[in-house]
Image: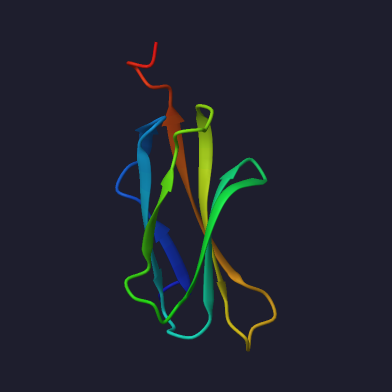
Length: 100
């Protein structure tokens, strides 16, 4: 059985200044999807879109971020369900090797 929502990115690591591309997959075409970039429990950026909007993809900018471990979090909100389904994936944002 497929999970209700999945989040993926082609890279596990990127440098400050690069974008973090993401793709989400859901088993339903109803509801809304909120994709957030988190540092710990704090939201750094967020995209919201209807699940009917296909493809479910986007990017997060890393230009103003501190290097560290970040989490991509996708929450699927469906009206008939009391709690959203959540998927997470971690991404390392490394210091720019040329940013001296």
